[in-house]
Length: 265
Image (cartoon, rainbow, N blue to C red; front, side, top):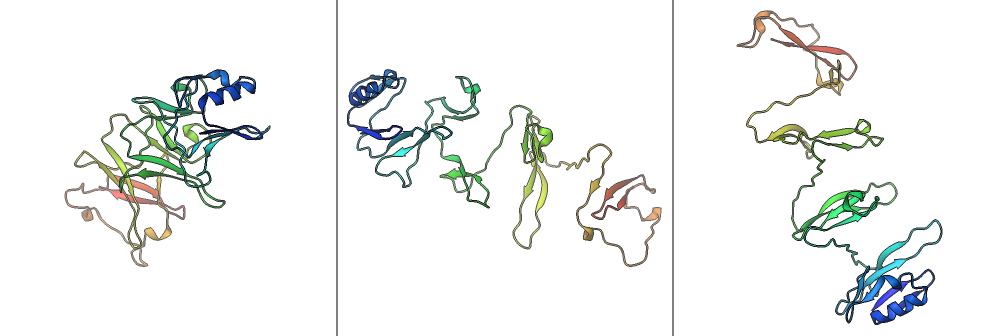
């Protein structure tokens, strides 16, 4: 049984041919898109196959001026927890949403078909004062969430604008990368960490200010004085194996805005 909500009422039919006849009675605009294709189904521009012992159905509700058209689930279970699934055609079909054009490249969002999917992305709305959530769902107990730019493109997070310059955080891909940056949170009493991970055994971590800028540390307590007396050192205090004289100075700025120097032998 199929229910088709109209602007002011819902028509219910038991057979596909009844649907066609009634739609034609409303001017044939929708009915002309459908063609009989055997018992229990409709084929043509729209295919409505029948399901054995079905109780739930697709509901399309028109909207007045300024209101959206609604696509949802109808039937006896309407209002309870019943999913609405839009399925791309196997083996490589995709569901395209929004955008322009009639091909996949014109869509604003593309969801490719995957016949072996066990995990998925879920987006949850939120009440006033709470943030929406994007997370991983599925059968696995622990699973990563991957964001991938195309080629050497950049992933931008936060900020304003539609260009990468407006992002609060940029993640740049180099195409053939084997090492990356890992940020690990911590429980109470432990310290979060920023580290290098990847296939190399030993790899440096580079912090690069913009232009002639310097690295700035964020709290006033992280650089402490050695007592109340200014301390001095001589060339002989250089670490073993280092040059006997200071070669360079590492410049930084503390949380108070004061410039400091770290000797480099």
